[in-house]
Image: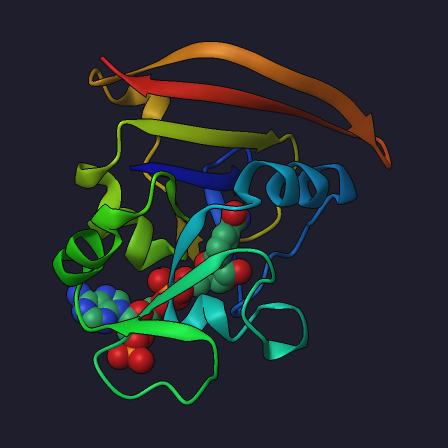
Length: 159
Ligand SMILES: NC(=O)c1ccc[n+]([C@@H]2O[C@H](COP(=O)([O-])OP(=O)(O)OC[C@H]3O[C@@H](n4cnc5c(N)ncnc54)[C@H](OP(=O)(O)O)[C@@H]3O)[C@@H](O)[C@H]2O)c1
């Protein structure tokens, strides 16, 4: 299983239910990287999807302890159930948010991480993989600057 996330310099990933700094280069990278995949999201992240709809051209799995009234999504009630249900898909990507990344990290061996070199205040964080001896950067995929903010997309692999 894989995951994709954009982190700020302090590994913050969001505040108030959304991303305080979002780069269009990162949105494009997200679209291209997740296209055709089965994506797994927490119920709160689902609420932050454009138009409040499932992502097109992807199988959308949502994790919730309750009911989710949205057409076109597969609802799972735990990370374990999501891992089981998605085994049939060739490419499965965890797309957040904070609680789902944390709980599903043990299932993942590949992480696409966009490092956005800004530090807005976050209330939600991703574990710092640079300080985790189990993970290493395998490849730097892209880098650039947008609106004066540097960014790079790194491929991390579990050792
Ligand atoms: N930077 C990025 O790349 C990125 C990507 C995605 C999201 N984000 C940010 O992350 C933040 C949202 O993260 P979050 O942690 O607040 O919410 P979240 O992980 O998106 O969703 C949390 C919800 O998932 C369900 N859930 C969590 N653990 C569960 C379990 N063990 N069993 C069953 N259901 C479970 C619960 O839904 P119910 O309440 O329905 O039971 C819970 O309220 C936002 O700020 C968003 O912008 C950032």
